Image 1 (cartoon, rainbow, N blue to C red):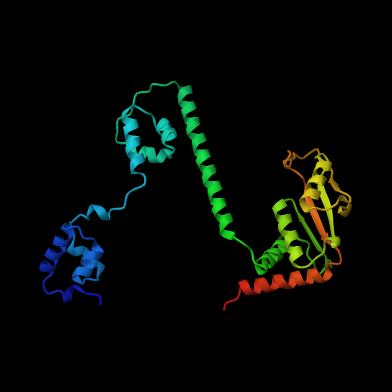
Image 2 (image 1 turned 30 degrees about the vertical axis):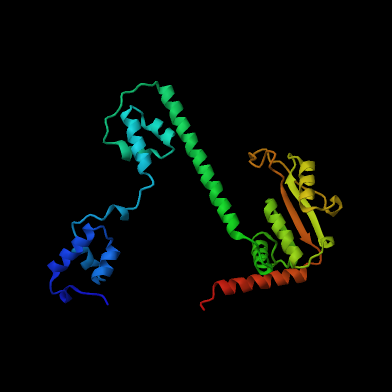
Length: 285
């Protein structure tokens, strides 16, 4: 039961007991349980002015960095050099050492620029490590996919990237286009789950005419583990001299088109499943 101030007939006597317990090294929770005071406001009034015991203080992970930064500043180090040495932000360094005297400049501008560049490179390295760590944790969190999970993922994937039927343009066929090899692999795994045989699949490479066409064709054939006979003639995108291409380099391999033959019934199942997902996701139940 929660206490109110009016229920304490001798507040000062209770405070004396609370202060004594505090000085013995008890935490607020321990004092609460000992005195049976369950109102946080009153409990704080009872120990007001008494510092918490050292063992209840949470250590600050940056205390060591702060101490080291101050030590380096007193040795005459600049913000840039401290930042590069400790791998922390400039704002943190400034907060920690701004009360200390500013050191005299002992380096040329070129040397200072080199130190600043080193600090920036270290920042980029730390960010890259954090980025990789976050991605790896997320990847491991996925674990194994059940058939139902893969089915739902595939429906969403197709509805985002596949061809769709329109009232003004009847297209009840299954055609999927993407440049991401991961998307292609997931889509093929989904088709296998649905029992679509490989002889019903036809592939087409779509790529810029100035790219490595032969290399792209071989890349996609290897990725989908299909004979080149299962590929239609490659579709080439002609070059427009007024545009500056950004899709260049060895990693550019165009897009792969996957078409399922006799896919009208499969398309209807996909569209119906997608409507079911939308209905379930937006249900108010």
